[in-house]
Length: 333
Ligand SMILES: NC(=O)c1ccc[n+]([C@@H]2O[C@H](COP(=O)([O-])OP(=O)(O)OC[C@H]3O[C@@H](n4cnc5c(N)ncnc54)[C@H](O)[C@@H]3O)[C@@H](O)[C@H]2O)c1
Image (cartoon, rainbow, N blue to C red; front, top):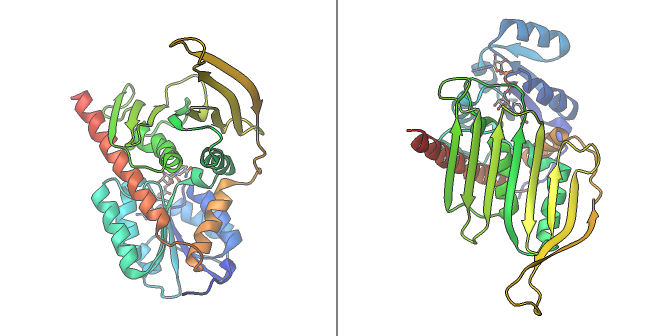
């Protein structure tokens, strides 16, 4: 059994330093030793060399892979490059943190999981919301049984935000909600359907609706869209006895539990009534989810926790994305 060691001593390299990558670099630089930064863009490299004077900068990922002192590689490049870069890093015996989703096909994700297991390396997809204290609280509420049997989970992720041209709303937005709803329900879906439409860019759906049904009978729904007047970041869990909502747009009340449910009184034959009781909001620590996510990766590479759990969960997410995408294409054809 390996012995856990301090995260600050971990020597890391990061590939991809765009908008999101810079947030990762800030955190990993604070928490560990960020030795290499790699980006194809000349201006970005020049800017980063100034911001991180002690760090080596390159445009060639091979420089990193050839450096035996590097234990882990952080990948924050565009999605279509993830699988290839992650595979190469694992083959070079590095631990890998890779932005979501690590692959666009489940066969590729399976290959990464097998490789990580074979090499005894950590493979962690960047499913940020799983480290969000609000999502952790929602999971705690669901697992406590307070809601009764969970019947339905639905996610809303809408806003007039960055409209991506190489990823549709399913892959760009839906990956977040899928990771959360699979975590909450803890089953693989038995049936998946998606409908959507590409209004702005050909074949890049900007509005997508998904339906999932699970072996236990639970169902889930996602509304994902870049064409919307509201900014909504919400997950709702409908239980037989109570209902709970995680709302990331709320500054303080991230989770709310509603004591509301239908009831079937024994006195009235075949009629349902509704019960509305207290509404309360459990305390959720205001901690940066990205910081917690980076810390988790460093703990894993330091020998704490199951090194492959996150990768296996990530595989279920990629499988679901792949099936939803196939459904989207079938319906559109
Ligand atoms: N977890 C989250 O909440 C979250 C939020 C935003 C983005 N992301 C993910 O982060 C990743 C990056 O997104 P972004 O918004 O920073 O994109 P971006 O386009 O701003 O940056 C990508 C960077 O990668 C560089 N790059 C591309 N191919 C490369 C290669 N082969 N080698 C080295 N550098 C390469 C580009 O030059 C660019 O600087 C994406 O996978 C995205 O899905 C995650």
